[in-house]
Image 1: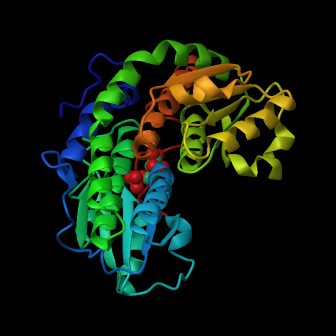
Image 2 (image 1 turned 30 degrees about the vertical axis):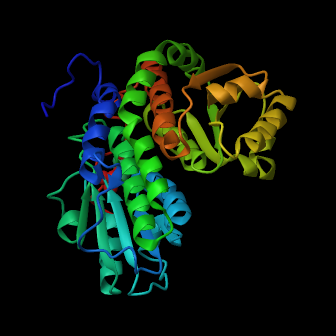
Length: 368
Ligand code: G6P
C-alpha cells in the first residue's frame, strides 16, 4: 500500500472508499470462493469444543465485537461475554479455562485490550487476536492471529478497519457454527455467497449515496445533538454512528437500542434533535417503524437509513431517507456502515474540523 491520500481530501475519505478492495482481501483469507466455504480455523482455538467465548476491545473495535456477539450466538450457538477492555480487565469475571477469548484491535497495541488479554491468559483461556497490525504486541501474545488485512489506517476515526473486523468476525462465526454443527452445509454456502457479494455492493453504494449524504450532512452540521437508533446488529451500528459523529464533528450523539427509546431518550425528542434510524428490512423492521412513529408523533425529525424493501413499505413522513440496495442480513452491518461513516465524514467537513486528527484523540491508546 502506498500511504498517501491519492485523490482524496483526507485519509478518512480515502479509507472509506478503499473498503470494497480491502474487504475483498480480508474475505479472500477466510473464504474459499471455489466451493463457497469458510476456511476452517486450524490452530489455536477449537471452536467445536469451547463452552463460551469472551470478547474484549475498545472504541470502534468494541462495537465490531458487539456485532460479532450477535453472530457467534446466532450461528454458532456460542454464549459470548463482551465488555470494553477497561472494564473487562478489572471486573473479575469468572472465566472457564476451557473457553476462548477474542481481542479485537486495529493497532494491536491498545493498553486496556492487552491487559484484558493477559488476564484471560492467566486464567488459562485460549487467545485469539483480530488485528490489523500482525507484528503487534496483541498478535504476538495470542495463540491464534486473525488478520483483518485492511492495510494501514491513518485516519484516527476507524472506518475500513471496522468493516474488515466485521468481515473476519462473520467468517469466524460461520466457521464456528460449522465446527459445532449449528450451521449446515447449505447455510454455510448461502452465507458465504452473501459475503462474496459485499465488495460489489459496497462499490455500488459508495458510487451512489454521496449527493444525498452531503445534503443531509449540511443539516446535521447545524445540530447540537443527534440520536441514532437501531435494533439487532443495527444497535451496535447505531452506537458506532454516534461515536463517529462525536469523534470528528464534535456533535453530541448517542446510539440507543430502538426498543429503549421509551425508557429515556424519548424525553429529548424535539424538532432540534434529528433521529437517525438504521433499519434494514429485517425481522426487526416493523418494531423499528413503530419506534419511528413514536418519534414522529412528538415532532421529531427522522433520517431513515433503510433498503429498497424498507423504503417501499415504511410510509413514514421522514425528513430524509437514504435507500440502500436490498442485501442479506449477514452483510447488512457492513453495507449500512458506509452511509454512517460518510455522514460523519461530510458533517465534519462542513464543520471544518481536523477530520484525520480530531482534537484530543489518538489513533492508538497505549496508556491506561
Ligand atoms: C482509539 C482510536 C479508535 C479505536 C480505539 C481502539 O480510541 O481513536 O479509532 O477504535 O482506539 O483502537 P484499536 O487499535 O485497539 O482498535
